[in-house]
Image (cartoon, rainbow, N blue to C red; front, side):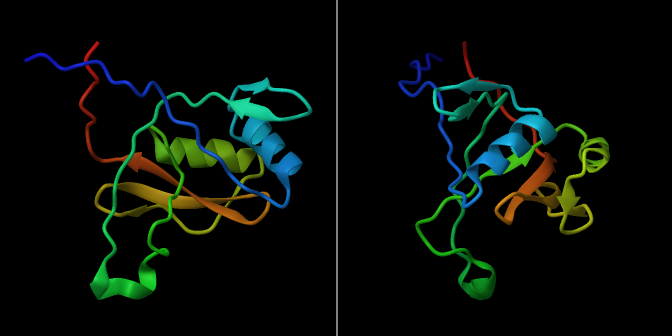
Length: 131
């Protein structure tokens, strides 16, 4: 089966923060994302892998839904227990213990600006993109 090349070659994500310098340092120094200085301290971080999901709004649990037509950023890893231990050694704080959410083993970390970011270890296998 022939699969046409994807016209989209990547994704650019963005955090908006009241503490941009601290958040940039956190992403670079604590989470170890390599960065390119685009000028004037604007760091662009290289992200090793990405995937994208589309989640429905759950009418039965409306109190748990984010506002509709929004987006979220999560980080994933191969070994959540080791990753959490490594990040805690660097001073990263977490909001909850690791829990099984069905799609993955999940916790949330706190980044500067009081950003709560999901970190998870997927329990699914991704289909590799065709070359």
